[in-house]
Structures are given as C-alpha cells and as structure tokens.
Length: 555
Image 1 (cartoon, rainbow, N blue to C red):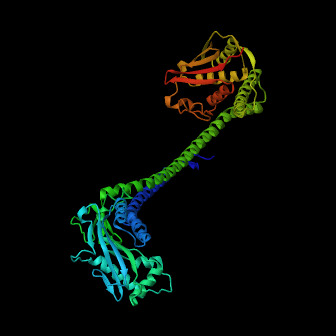
Image 2: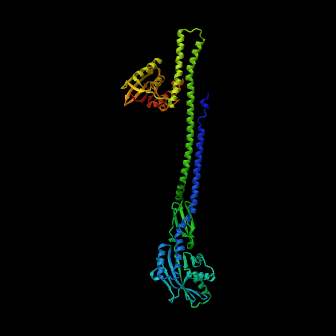
Image 3: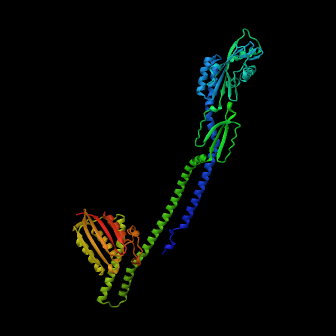
C-alpha cells in the first residue's frame, strides 16, 4: 500500500519559498535597473530636447527671415517712407525681436554720387535715409537727404552690402539664370543682431547694371533700389518651453556667459542661437529635485508593468502551491478512505470467515449454535450490503442517475419505525420524538430513511456512554417540513463545521480511531440537495449537536 509519506503531492515549502525569493530578487533588481535606465534616459533628454526648444523659439525668426524680408523685392525699389512705415509697423507688431528698421531709399545710375559708392561708371547711393521703431523719436525719423549740405556717414551696413552687390554683378554670368538662394545670399548681409537686405533686381536689370560697370550708357539710366537694415534684439525672442517638466528655467544669455554657481544640485545645458543671434545662446537650468520628478513620472509606468508581471508570477506560484496542497489533501482523503473502507469491509468479512470455519469444522451443531451462526452471518452480510448500498447510492445521487420517488408517508409512523430499529440495535440508545402540525407529506421514503439512519447512527456513535440520547422533532413551518436531530454528544469544533459535509472528511477524535469512511454526512448533504432541501448544523463542544433538515412540503 502506498503510504502518505510516499505521496507525489506532498508539499515542498522550500521549493516554493526559493521560487518566491528568486522572483522577488529579480523584481528588485529589475526595479533598480529600470530606475537607472529612466534616470539616464531623462538626463539624455535634458541634453537633446534643447534642440526642439530652440526650433520652437526661433520659428518666428525663421518665418521673418525667409518670408517677410524677401517681400521688399516685391516693390521693385519703389518703396517710399509712408509705405515703408506701414510695412515696418506690421513687422514690429508680428516680430517683437525687431527693435528698429533703417530704410535706405537708394538709386543706381551712371552718374557719380557724393554720398555713396562709385565704381567706374557705376554709382550706388541713397536719396533719403529713414529710421522706424517704437523708441525712435518723431523728429529723428529722417536721418539723411541728398539735398542736405551737412556731411553724413552712411555706415558699414550700406557700404558692406553695396560692395557685396557690386562684386556679385561684376562676376555675374548673364547667360545663366541665377537661383533665388544665390540672389538672396548676395543681396543680403547678416551681422550680429542685424540683417541688411536690398531688393533683388530682375535679370534684365542685372544685365544693365553689368553694362553700367563697364561703360557710360546713353541716355544715362537711373534705377530705384531699396535697402533696409533690421536691428534685432535677441532678448525679445519668445522662448517656447516645449518640455516644462524637464526645463525649470530657460533664458537667453551672451555666448560668453559662464555661471559662477556650479552647484551639483543643478543641471544645466546650452545651445547657440542661429544667424544674427550667434553671439547668444539659450541657457537651460533645472534643479535636480525638479528633474527627479520627471524621472519618477517616466519610471512609474515601467515599475507598474513590472509589478503586474511580478504579481502574475506570484499568483502562478500561489496557484501551483494551492494545486499541490489540494492534491496532497485529496491523496490523504483517498488514503484514509481506502484504509477505513478496508477496515470496514475487513471486520465483517473476518467475522463471516470465522463463523464459516466454525460451521465447516464442527461435526455436529446444535440448533442454538446454528441460529447463533446464522444470525452472525446475516448481520455481517447486512453490514457489507449496507456499506455497498451507501457507496452505490452516493455515486448515483452525485451523477443524477436515480429518480426521486414521491410517496405519502405518515411522519409519526416513519419516525417510530426508525426509533424502534435503532433501539433494538443499541439498547442503551434513548431516542425521543415529537411532531408539531405535521402528519403526512409526500417524499421519497427510502432516501428520507437513509437520512434518519445516518444521523441517528452518528448521534449514537459520537456520544459518551452516559449521554447516548437523541431527540427528533418534525414540524411544519411556513409550508416547509423542518426536521431536527438533537443529541448530547461530544459536539463539533467550530473550525470543522464547514468541513463535515465534505466527501471522505473525518474529524480526528477518539471516536474515529477505529476508522470511518467519511461518507455519512457527505451522503446526507447529497441526499438533501437531491430532495431540493437544505441541511444545517449547530454544535457546541461537549454539549451536543443539532442537525436541521428543511424539505419542501408536498401533500
């Protein structure tokens, strides 16, 4: 026989514990690595995301430089002070970083000019110079007029772009059409905080300009050319912080700016502004505690997924453990069932074998001996038959293989027959009964008899010799048949109440030492359920137990 010790389902606590410890250690290590990854990722973002901030912040400047400045060429050199004033007002309103605009109302001709550039027969000089801006006084709008007698310095902006334009015209290949980027490059000049732009002539005008550089034309032509210098203030650039949870503070600083405070409690990075703002940079600074919040917000979803995965592993470990535990219990129940069933069969079989041997070996048996051996054989055969019938009935009820009979019974006669049979079997068993408001009802007498026999047998078996008493009470309450069995036995411990109706389950006590199959109360539960009723129990240790059966009333 397989012993419980040899069970393949015995619990292995050390294996489960080792598994839990390993996955817990792996979980903690994974959290540590995930946090370090999050920290490194956010620190890299702190360095790389500055490009997006720069692109967002400098976008208005790019629009101004690529779209608004070239609009000057649409006027073909015929801008005047009034038109330019309106144009500048629009620019100042849309682009706050433009602080002032100087307008050169200029001409190109074959005639030398006093104020301007003269190369061979080519001359380029302003007729008027105006300045526009929010901070420009009204009496300072006009800076220069050709009619003025006082000397005026045109400045580097006019001279530098004029020389650049003349050099380009001189080297121009008039057999090819120049590209827009090429023209824009040679007719504009970008310096620190300043963009100077002259309207781009048509190709036909450029060809004439090239001729004017070589010879004096007759009649002498005059062409209008407008030049504008845009003064820019980098501190007026609106900073677009696209990562407010990453960058605590962003400001514009000179390229040479070097903070005195280099505390380890702060993170800083920088990026140079483009074009005319190249002497300045965007300076980013955040407290480490501020960046830690962003690291945490990035880490927490990762940790949540890892926690979910860890929880699944723990659940799997728990389910495996529970399955092993259940299998272990089932093996124990089956082990006990086989042992107890063997004992239950072995006792009557042994008695039958002894009686049979005595009959076989005896040469002559008296009438008294024949009756004694016959009674023994009959009783032991009844025990075997009853045990087999109980097992068969239990299986049939579980599998719904039998039909519920409906026969009328007189409850008093039924209880009295049960009492008589048990008192004959156990003369020291005192059984009393009473009926209240109930005489007859329709039920299955065989199944009801099995209930009465099992509960009465339990009441006798689990009561001390001096308390082998049972009281049966049958009553009709709210159209339900209520039958109670109250004994004065050893009682059932509270923790065992929920287990007594389980198949093969036995309470360990001195009355179970000789073995019990563990089917009696489980059989009662199945029978009551099959009869569409309910069975409940109340018990106190060393005081007694009450079983209550509630069945549907049919009359």
